[in-house]
Image 1 (tube, rainbow, N blue to C red):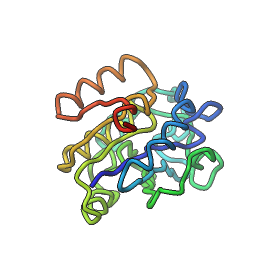
Image 2 (cartoon, rainbow, N blue to C red):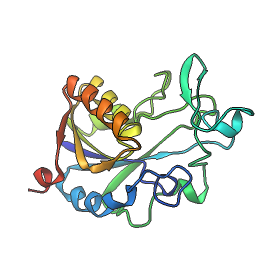
Image 3 (tube, one colour):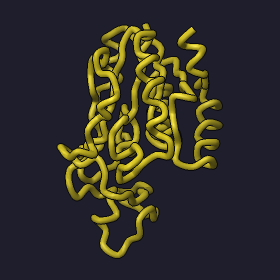
Image 4 (tube, rainbow, N blue to C red):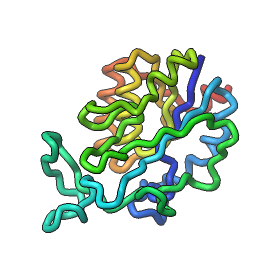
Length: 203
């Protein structure tokens, strides 16, 4: 049983959004085409309360994209994004939701960031996704979405550590920076994650 995991296809991460991933909207048609090829489709949403501590605005005097320590963890300081109920937190209207059976929200703890679909960054709280997938009989998780070097990377990494076979559909993701995308890919490959083109799935 296979699951397509669609990571954070939200307006704030797409061109025009407050934390836009370059070329992020280019993957939308592919994400829709891929969905019928899986037994289960699940989506995630970044869903931050206002004033989330991952926002630079919550740390006066700190620069955007600076890295600090917070709650004993490294924390990059982002622009305000995906605030609960805001237009930027919405899934892109061009993303087909007909086959999406569940949406898991992450980043809801105001004190902890959560890149992964499975856990917060400190692995202190689970989203429940792993148990949901197991209850549905899923053994393979294919990850697509935004961004390759952050939420896709950490979601794929945690899916692997949770015992699933994991694929990253490489051309159905987009990243923030080439260097960090390459580092993320190398780390995932070392952990047994496979990178495949969408054409292999669609075939």
